[in-house]
Image 1 (cartoon, one colour):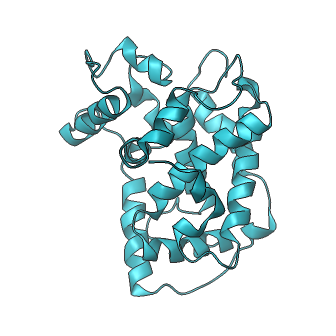
Image 2: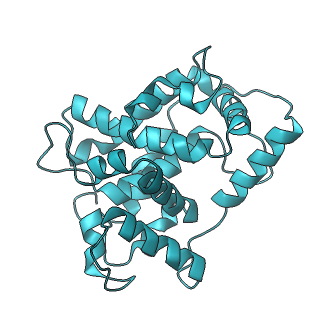
Length: 239
């Protein structure tokens, strides 16, 4: 399924990532400050929005992603074979957003606009000794959004996270309402670093994602992390 580019890869590929039991997954009960509750609800609202190709805002975001990735190259249409160059599975990226919703597009666009050097390095696979069978950039991005939502226990709208990792992240979110988007960028860079370190190829993607999640959890549990920028892997990002 992975080799043929089935959209089932998005959900199936991550099922084994998110099923892993860890000490940091222990269920906890905690109270939210009004600020944390407001930040959480805003983020959960974003997560709950599905991509809708009929909405102008969504169309413009998708078009914006293209021109952030390939400035100066005209996009012929929102449904175009050109999208395959970015690592979408077909000519219509909207079919790949089912795994991550509109926020997965927002995450990619945030990455491209705020850390363009890192974004371009990953898009063009410019760092390290690359594999013959590389991961598809855009679909990997959707997988990362989906993984973070599960890791941080953000799936349920109007429900607070019940894990230690989720509780820690809420503190970071209350300090910076773009913490999820920044964590996404960190995760993408960290995933690529793990990919290179493991000399991975296409079929190793699930293993790399597990390793990436484990590294993220370790960093979030560090005592001196009080802002998203305090995560050690934040240093991987380049503007």
